[in-house]
Length: 333
Image (cartoon, rainbow, N blue to C red; front, side):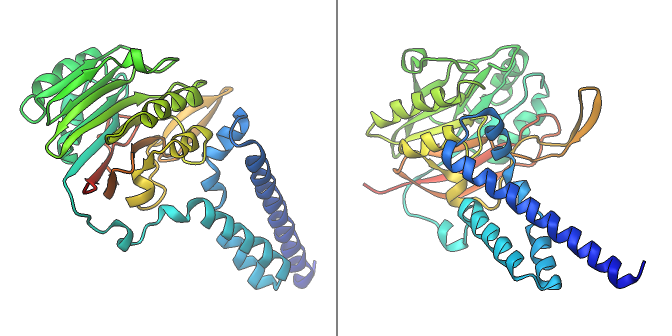
């Protein structure tokens, strides 16, 4: 076969594949705009859609090499969609400039329910230098050890451990008053959310530590919004929301008056799960699941705060999540 003919066939195949890719991408976009993530298949695909944009640079390179103007248009449209969905995750330094006012460092950390390595967990918490820490999936052995090991740094602690994924703990450098969370948050959760009123030097701050339950994510988000909407004082929400920033539950929280510290002060996708790659059998076939696929661990706050910074902590070597810490500056009254 002549080389020129072979080259044309290859280019034709690549261009056809590119258009098939773009058709699939914009079909998803249309369905997402119409239905959000209300359908399970859309929820899963949307959670991973940032990865679907990875071929776009190669597509644009093909458009340039093959001199296909229409492919340039399709690829350019894909870039605009990416910018609309994810461009805000890449904050410029000016957006994260230091703000005046007292600060509070807030941390969320799903430790993985089988994890009893108190040294690894305590080390991550100390590295964060957080004022308040919300832990999810805390088992009884870990809770007992943390209470002792971190007693000096965090003299104020509440633990509601469990051998399953429903265990929760909240640690604070400042005194707090426990609010009866079951009376406030109804519905199904992975453990009743912990709600405390922290006596911060700059004033009282409500802190919520929650682990949203699959199948009830929107109900859980609605409960959080209902509480926040009735408060005049600052609120910080920590937790494993089991939803990315394109999912309907996330949008509920934002529309309800909460702001995402990572969106305002972080850099990049900020994916927190899984912390490391692992192998899993799907219908008998071994599949390697890569690390850091989705961002489902969040620090939310009300408009009383201006985020100074938001970062992921290094992997502790044991948990299947990465911890997230945000530094929040209280706005002057």
